[in-house]
Length: 494
Image (tube, rainbow, N blue to C red):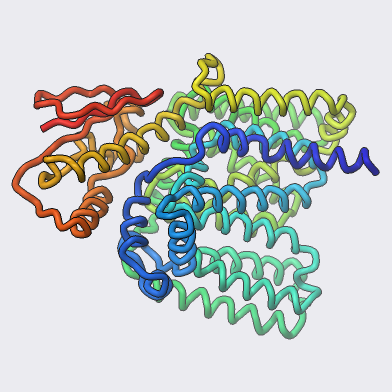
């Protein structure tokens, strides 16, 4: 009994070790990107307003996301750390549910640990106010997969799932799209032999989906294949970010074909993946595309229809959202990793035969490294992994300090301008280093500053001051410098 508990604890701790690594290293951030707009709306709204009125920067109406953000921000005395903590807790719950489903639990846990450590760019939303809906959506999808075997046979479960879908839709309207895929797949899998209640709820789901689409159809969307592919490719490119991470993606891709029983076909499949990866790398395409298609082929071959019904809409999501942000891929990555671990019981058996002390030592070392990194120690190999996120974190604190200084300075009547505005740099930045790109765009900053000036009764005069990041100099008068451990010096010029 104790041995069983110890194994389960090892599996769970291993599964969340990657995400806890980043919690220790980087939590919390200050405002970044669209968070400035969200905070502006939170500070200028009542709780009732946040429930009943859409916020300008949000494409679809998300009353539950808005109200939860409002409550957590105000509970934290106008700080955003509780929102970030909320994001973390729900993601950990999702990982726990997915792990419970897995038959190769230790393998799944190890893959989760690696995935969250190396693909952290997809999970930057953990540190964003405006990313508050991602973890709930991942948890919701984990719940749907968890109940897949009982879903059709229990009317109470069907009704509860629909109610949960409607609630999660208030966090993000895409939840009803996911549920529609899911309930449709269940209908087909069971060859239309379902209860009367199921037959009533299925068309109701499509009606609800139609109403949500009509209600939120406030802008035109180009859904041509080339645009969809470009959006997906860009998002995956930003997850992969470097050639070194491409090696990790290649490892996951090879692992995705090891379920094949015949060794010769398994070897040929792995060689094909290596060959395609070289071609993709030379063409500047993300190897993640190969991983995605390899996993989809596996699920089709193994007839994992329910998992496909969840994974496909999650993969479509970054394709239909024209942002190219890595975070858009965060929804499907946990389920992609889980799918890789399917039918690899022989690897699981090998892992379980190893001395469990080895795993505990590795986890302990990972946490020690995360603490040392948090304390600012130079760890050559670890720094290459942690520096990107630490640079982003430092920039958020630099900008926060700049804004505080600016609103109390003699230059508060001037316009604050980001001299390296990153508005169009979300696809690929060739001319600027990471530490030189501002942590938000000018539009979101203007919205935030304007609200602050209105609150403080500050009038705008016809003058400007400029902010640079990453030690960038301007041929202007230097007013102030803001130092950091990883992002270099941010400077304010007049």
